[in-house]
Image (cartoon, rainbow, N blue to C red):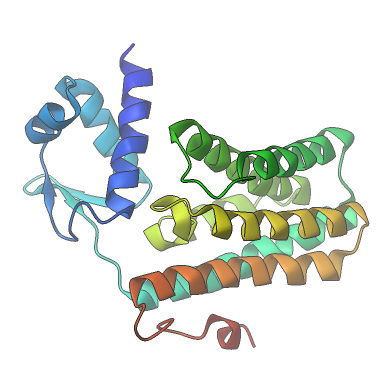
Length: 233
């Protein structure tokens, strides 16, 4: 039972970090987190390690786990790289064509999210997890369909920046998520139609817009720290 508990704690810890409930540079200690979550230290230790692997925490033998700080410039640069990588993946997937199974998975994630996001009420835990899982499947399916063994590792590198995670992980705003799901639908349609250039453009715009949204949320009074659309020129 340790692994399922650790996975649940990892997701909960990730959401708390992205929601700003822990400050950048703050030490996260096993004993205090075990008391907070009402769990033993073993799954808490695994949850901390998982978030360190994802880039949300830093670890050192002397200091333990610390919430990793990131500047807006880091997030902007990571989104710029992610847009290029995922845009390439979308184009290659369109040029190669989707298998029936890949096409089914993409359509299923979009249709399921459309149902999950049909209202404006805050999402419950089940709806949040459904959206998060569908979003991951959508992007992963396109990466796999590109059939380029270098794309996945390159994407994993930039995804270690917390801001590269969708900006709504903390709020799960249904309006914002519906916008992203609309992006997914148009990207999927272009890939199915074998429109590689258009699919690449739409995927890059999708990622850039997500980057601008998160930078605006971090600096609401001043807007994005960096003009991501301009950075792509």
